[in-house]
Amino acid sequence: MVPFISNQVIKCKAAVLWEQKNPFSVEETEIAPSKAKEVCSKILATGICWTNEHMTKGAIVSKFPVTVGHEATGVVESIGEGVTMVKPGVTVIPVFLPQCRECKACRDPDGNLCVSSHITGHGVLADGTTRFTCRGKPVYHFMSTSTFTEYTVVDETSVAKIDDEAHPEKVSSRVTRGSTCVAFGLGRVGLLVIMGCKSAGASRIIGIDLNKDKFEKAVAVRAIKCISPKDSTKPINEVLSEMTGEASLVAHMNYGVGVVVGAPLSAKMLTYDPVLLCAGCTRKGCVFGGWESRDDVPKLVTDFLEKKFDLDQVTTHVFPFKQINEGFELNATKFPYFTVFKVLFKMCFLLILEG
Image (tube, rainbow, N blue to C red):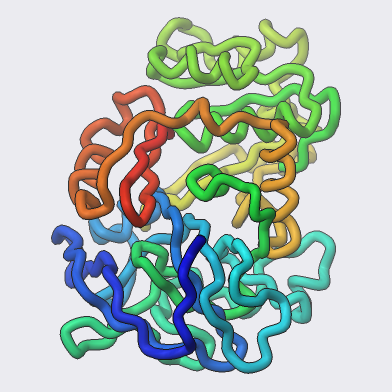
């Protein structure tokens, strides 16, 4: 049971990044009360994403000092005036992609990039201010969530209510039934892509990675076969065609769909033959997997509780929260050579997951 605090200033531990390319400093931080349409939550578990790594290394722009983190589960501690979707005591997931349910993007069945999104580094909540103070200085928010802290405040549009039975440490292209899918890269995201494809009814899922040490995990989460481009002199598209008996869905001139998942480094470029687009194939990106955060995240949690996918496949290490810098260092030095790697924090200890 999480003890509740009245709607007042909270003093708690938070991981503050004062400058890029410097370690985190875990120190006492003041959390201001929730304002109108805001939710204050006690964080139960939170994870490291490579977006955090990119930001700490200078590849993503942010204001400083900042408390980062955007993968977490928590319990609502208090709510501001006008909040109607959650109440104190309910389990929630702070989501970096808000869903107001009112703007054009939210109402469009094919849209999910809510106009209230702050994923570009504003560092403040909807009213233009922060709720964090450390050493007498304002600390900026990160991706509307800031979860590397014992307590955080987010806009109501950035919390998804989930099932209380969900384990906090495990609830951090539209595939049609019978599809053939290929996952390029078998890190944590790649494994979760395979799980999602299988859950959606894909009949054949192939994993591709230069590191063969990752193949065992990929097969465990239901990839039918894994291949390394280094094992063939042929282009990977030809190898896939021979394996599936048809042109690779990613490369097919007419109906292939390729989706880029994840946050790229700044100034990185992709090149492709524009003739493929003229022929009708699709190349696309996605944000939040194309899902509507507050509506769809609870569905994912329900699928997990119904054992439609197994997050135990990605668990590896446990560390105390105070060792956040060691967790980041391990995450950075082991990637990409470790077989899949992911780091999660509980407020009393830290989990490192493969991915």
